[in-house]
Image (cartoon, rainbow, N blue to C red; front, side, top):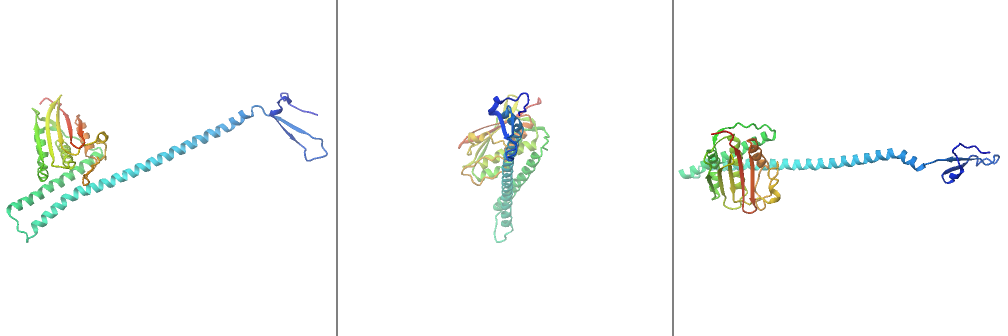
Length: 310
């Protein structure tokens, strides 16, 4: 006796599942159940496909999360290193003038040392110079802190750019002379009156002169010039230092980036100075250009727009 559905056919023998229903009972004649399962592969793919897709999405998500975790860990490690370098460099920058002032003060207090008027003036001059340097470093840290928080607000007023440059150069007079160097001034701008934030512009020029001295392995020769160029007052600071390689030139304005110093192992810095320079000039509506030849010189050109008829 045979029972089957209408669409069942024995022609699909390869696709029919066959099972003996009473294989363990000898009293019954063999009774077989035939099950025809068309498109078995398609059914399996369809039923498993959703789970497979979910599994793939889950695996990809885990890989992405793992990669992001590694990137964040690497970045955190780099930021910690930058923070430690910043603290070490800042400590060095502040400690050096303090040590010099302390030594000079001890010499003045030591009654066993007989000082002539000329020597006395020299020591007091050193103390005065180091106090200026210390004040400059503290001021730089305060400016950088304000720069970091985005709280720098310019207060432009009418100033004489040449007088401003002279003020900056005067602060480095003793430091340049101690290294038997020279700062040459070439004021080519016919009119130097311009609206600037004197405090911040003096600060960025001091930063450039300070870098010119730091990154020089011989007697420093620095040239500061001014010129009127296409409605801008251009202030150039050129040195004879170690220069900057092409690979580093494109990154010098990146925050916390410090240029490799080669054989100058004692050079310290915060790694924020040049980004601060660019920010201040840009806030004035100007631009910064730099050219450098490694081993010979570097020149920074700051362009400030003359926005008012003076």
